[in-house]
Length: 255
Image 1 (tube, one colour):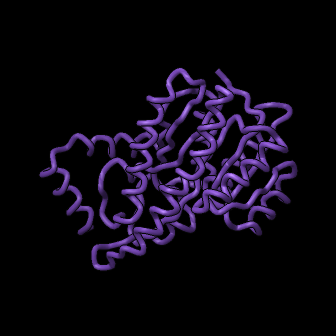
Image 2: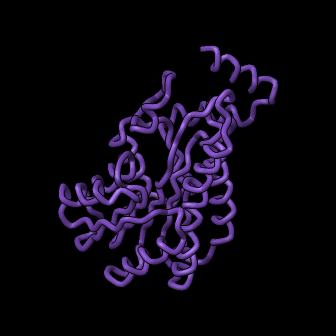
């Protein structure tokens, strides 16, 4: 099975895996009349990417503003029609140790990583359900599988996204709308460059985009997770009893 997408909207595409995925679809289009729209807050970076990849349309938005999201979707729909595939990759990341526990930092992550995605889902789900077709892929993280050290601001938002997608996926059965979750491992970006620890199985944005492109185009599986060895290891921690899990986490913190 190889899918054909006429209109693709990637939100959070100014850098990192969002930009790399846009480039992948640009270089390997799935249809002859494919349209790619890229969105993020940084309009300058979006314009630079559109210059590098002719045919891509930049539409800047702040996902924390629901009205701005709806306006952007109206603009896209008027010009290209309702997207066939939407990848919601907008997000922020700041490592946070317990010594720097901050309600403000947590709130900023919730506003962008969780509510930003929710703001996109509200108009998309309503319109795709009316049309009875469309695919939405939400980028969460393997950090959402279980509580990990130094991720008190980031991890819970990704866990919430996974839970939300599980809930909506079930309720969307039979509507023609496919909702999926993407759970990457560590990807080298300006965000993960903040980490002061060794990141196992670290991928480049291009490698991450290859995983995403392949599964978006060739499967309907609910979860797209990578790299496989790291995913297997972290999924194993989900079935460990708390005693063993916390012992393992304390060892990681000391490393």
